[in-house]
Image (cartoon, rainbow, N blue to C red; front, side, top):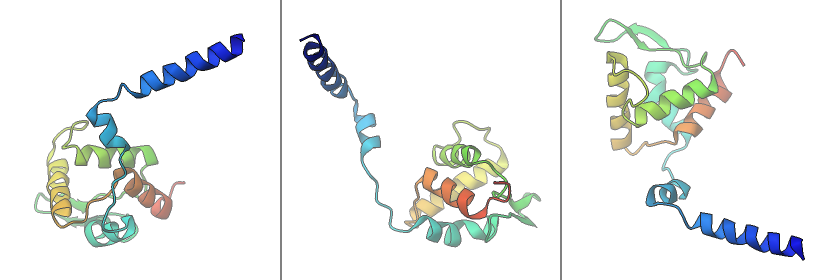
Length: 133
């Protein structure tokens, strides 16, 4: 009898808690469908600056810095943080010149319809190009 009562109470609690979500939480649960694969976005939008194998591009940009830093040496969590931060407008990093350029580039990527999931892109880069796995 006690097990039945506890099971009913636990089920009721789960139902009550699941009803306590806000619109933002619901939006996060919805699946977003992207037009292009992560690979297509990387090859068409990222490889020019970051290299075909995410090895970077040492050619100087207009600020005299390398055009694109290597991504193939970053840990998965570093890639996820950096990509999410860029899409969020630099909330977790300083807004230095390199970051501002990538933020601008990301807006152009989205405008061209080449939007991407940040976790999926980080996993694509890490799983396909990382040299320190």
